[in-house]
Structure formats: C-alpha cells, structure tokens
Image (cartoon, rainbow, N blue to C red; front, side, top):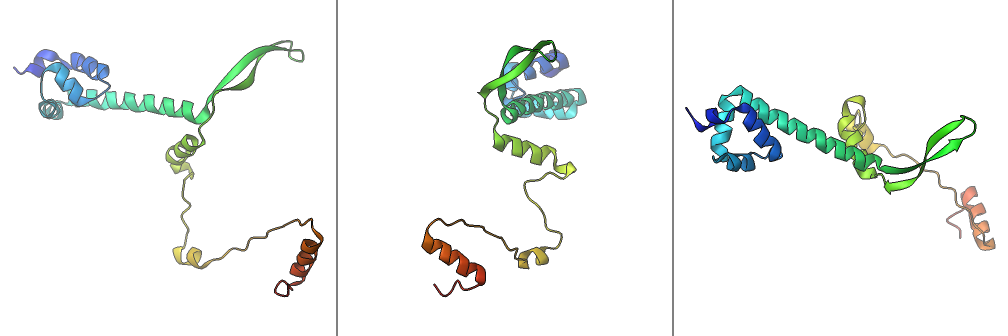
Length: 161
C-alpha cells in the first residue's frame, strides 16, 4: 500500500484547495515529490479529477476577479424616488473604475464564438491588402488666409497656394 492510498482522495482534495491547486506545494504538504504525485494522479482517475476540479475552481475565481476589474465597483446611495414611492439605489461614483482593457480582453476571448474578436479577419486577404479607403476630413479655419486656402482646396486648387 502506497502513501497515497493512506491519504485518500478527499484529503488530497483538501490539500489541493489549501494550496490553491499548486501541485508542487500540495506534494510538499503531503511529503512526496511533485513527479510522484503527478504519476499517481495519472494512474488514478479520482485523483486526476480532483486536480481538474481544483484548476476549474481557480479559473472560476480568476474569471470572477476579471469580471470585477472589467465592470468596476460602483458606489451607491439610497434615495427616495417620489414617482415610485420607495427608496431606490442610485450610483454616485466609482470605488474602482472599470478597466477597459480587461473588458476588451474578456469580450474577445469569451465572445469569440459569438463573433466578438480583437482582430477582424478579411474574407479575401488579397482584396483587403490592395483596398484603400478614402477618409473625408472636415477642417474649420478661423483666419482669413486659412479661409481662402479652404475655398481653393474645395475647388481643387490646393497646389496653387
């Protein structure tokens, strides 16, 4: 009988949870090497499942933290709304501002199947590489000389300045 069989899967799960799913720390806590623990887990499905479960729990915690970063934490106060005839929560500011980068990252990663992505892939790479889109720029001038220049540019005489 090996040391692992003495430990039992529930004790292993508890050790994993206490060590944040870190196999090296869990192995040290159990008094075995990481490679021995990993080998045993690969041979015993219930131990491998425990590792998968703990890593899934860690991922869930990370996603919850990322959600808070992306959406921010609002500050609220209760005030009486005469139209509704009851107290309502009203946002008055931010405790932590939303993080736009985290929001973009989560939308791109979690929304990829729904068509959200950081990058737009062209349907025909040759077509998009050769395409030039025009951009119209409207500029307002205040000085008399600039107004004259603007009029000439509209007529197509911009080279005759």
